[in-house]
Amino acid sequence: MEVGLGVKQRMAARAAQEISDGMVVNLGIGLPTLVADHVPEGRRVTFQAENGMLGYGRTPERGREDPNLINAGGLPVTEEAGASYFDSTIAFGMIRRGRLDLTVLGALQVGERGDLANWLVPGQRVPGMGGAMELAQKARKVIALTLHTAKDGSPKILPECTFPLTAREAVDLIITDLAVIEVTPGGLLLKEVAEGVSVEQVLSATSARLAVDRDPGSF
Amino acid sequence: MSRPDDAAKTAGSRTVADADAEQGKVASTVTGEHGKVVPLSRALEVFHDGMTLMYGGFGGVGTPPTLIRAVLESGVRDLILIGNDSGFPEVGVGPLIVNRRVSRLIVSHIGSNPVAGKQMTDGELRVEFCPQGTLAERIRAGGVGLGGILVDVGLDTIAGEGKQTLVLGDGVTYLVESALTAEVAIVHARKADLSGNLLFDKTARNFNPFVAMAGDFTIAEADEIVPVGELEPEEIVTPGIFVDMVVQSEGVEWKWGWE
Image (cartoon, rainbow over all chains, first blue to last red):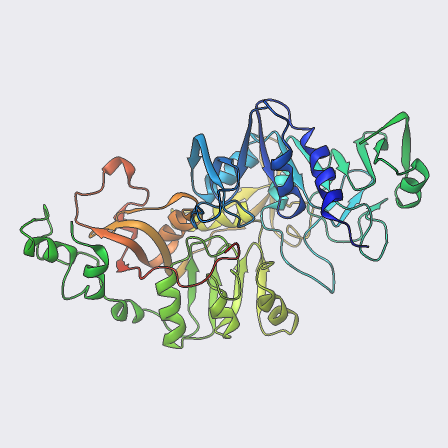
């Protein structure tokens, strides 16, 4: 199933709603990088890049890119007032020390207790974990931003991840093209469904146990 | 100040200080000396088959382009590379992998270089993955004379499997991760002075400062080489004591992914 950019932008916009004023946020590579464009007006947010920058801003105009001023996804960014540069040990020091309020990460699979698998597809793709283990394990809040099902239609939200884990019991909120699902101590809770999507559709695309909120909202 | 690239092309016979002297400007303490600046050909003498080579850079940003090209042209092979990632096929250390000069990698990811992935699947390239922050601290530990680090990241994943653990007084279980050093480390600096003091450029700093410390022998490639005394002591990121040689950068020749 190919998903259009419109759907991805809507997912990113929904994730951006989770950013509150004053937060320090790290966005993972791929889909999560779109979240930066949807931060609600007037909300101050400090973006951290694990390649050694705090306080990066929007994409520069074409022709004004600086090859040495990039985010962790390898894309050119700009400096916000108050930005700082540091080496990678300091970047991960901030993460391990618990100074990051929020990270938004891509996911291959999410387990019903919030386990995250996002770095290895056995027998297929072994890109490596990069900085995902630190981010997933140590950020105060972890959002998994992912399509609800894999390309072949198989569920990505499972009772237990079958791929090797990035971190155990790490994810707090799952945002997909179909739904917003909270990871609660009692299990997964369906909070919102995407416009035009029914609760039944979400349930049938999810193999983990999924409780439905009394009055699910829409996004 | 002379143009650094002028000094560069003939470094070894002429230094920035010499060039300054010709222009009637005299560098403070190193006039007539080359300091640690050498021509690229001399730097190449330290590379050999089968060596461990550590490099700075993140997706190729901050990886010394001139040294990488020189290593590739020198033909050395069976390299054991230690650094953040495998670059892109034409960026960073990527060309060393594409041209089969590397037998083993210790990195946090290879996602941006499909050739590395294919060589790993085909059994031609051994890859050891390490979480990025842990990898950085292992290199730093090597660079500051420690035996290793204690960290709980990845403890209950396959990144922690088979590794020694330790429970400290706080009751937390930590993985024991060994320090990393290398025979030669190469870094890319924005500026170097003749005694090897370095500073970096924005996000091109990344792994460079601690990689510089972890080499038994460290070579810095600098965009600009200045006389001793020209850098503000407060702005120096890597003290020259960790740097054995400085070579002039000829700049990045590869094309970035976003271009």
